[in-house]
Length: 262
Image (cartoon, rainbow, N blue to C red; front, side, top):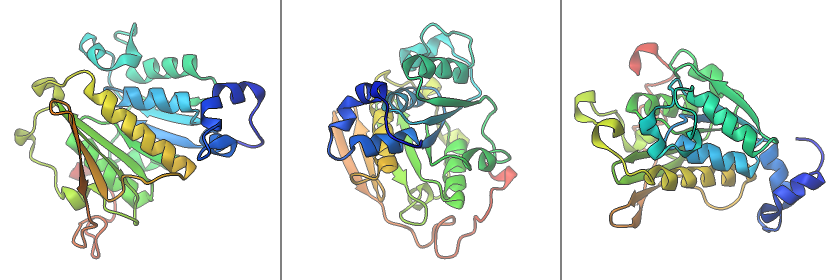
């Protein structure tokens, strides 16, 4: 974005502008930024909602799923859009909420063959996926491309968030080197998830994105927030860069995205 804010934008973003850490300059940075959210479901819903409301200028949304009746218990941006592609439903929501935001949609599944091309034009990527294969693919692609990544995941009553800054701090593989075998994992569809949980985790992810784009505060780089909704506790886990990490360690073994590895 070039130039300053217009009168309508000053009214819309007034509560940001009066914050000393954001101000008009910070809001201009948001309007000139671009973020890709991979996943438009439980986590993607609050991420998309609040980044659009905050005035992130370009919002990419990637998801190949359609809106199902069972989604509406937690994926609140899709109300009234049953059987519509989630990217179309999400884009419709964003356009109604904030005309300052340009929406780009990707209705194909994110794969090793397309991820590097898709992430290249974005300032930051958000992991709002629901499976380990995509999670590791995003981590690897973002580290290799030097793109910051806001990771979030949920399961039943628990969630976790961390921010990955390539070559500055640990990546997801520094903490969990390999994905568990499929037979050892259950999806939210199989195990269930309380509807409000993605709202909590997704909002934290969106907060991290906004802080990074403006350049304020302390990010969850080298730290993971673990949230337990039943106990209503937030625990912080310190994560160190693993020198033996196969992706970002001293002698990396993952140097490009291989189609048959995810």
